[in-house]
Image (cartoon, rainbow, N blue to C red; front, side):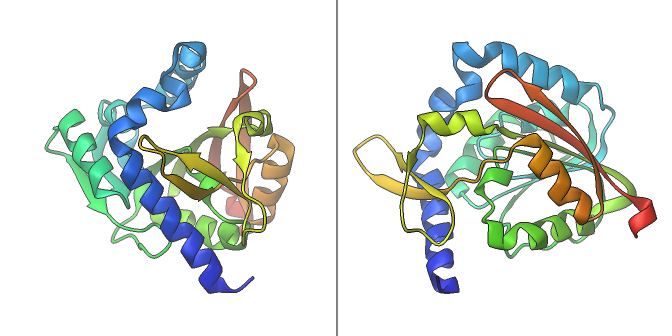
Length: 226
């Protein structure tokens, strides 16, 4: 389908997260009791990588992970396209060395390089057509020895989604309070598939599954491929 169809889908994805900002913390799966153990395990793995140094977070949303990153970062830049979510993030994380940036990650470019790049529940919102370009952006954000840490959902999580047929990228329907329905990109990766795709792009990747629903991935650039 035409690129403008994909742009429309991505614009609706941003609109969804803007509309959902005020209820996000009450509905995100890692905050419900059923996944408390998964969040604890992911947090332990993340903290095992500290200290982070100069840190960049993609799609920070309301700051659930921003607050954790700020504990171990020298400086922290957090980027998100939804001003409503960033306002909540700012109330949650008031540290002076945390900088919040409102920007669409598909057009944003870094002004500096970072020691640590983090994103949670974002990779699955990157359309397959932009997968390579997105990882090129991640590489451009990193210092030569920089590290990346990713959290996202396994294919098992597809069971709770409502697929949206006929879209320019894999997508689902998402509701917000008041009855509005939005489309959002949702791409699920099996660990072996994701590892293989990233290896082709020059990444060394270690992936751990966390329960049935989540995974974490630790990445570095493969210096032999640069």
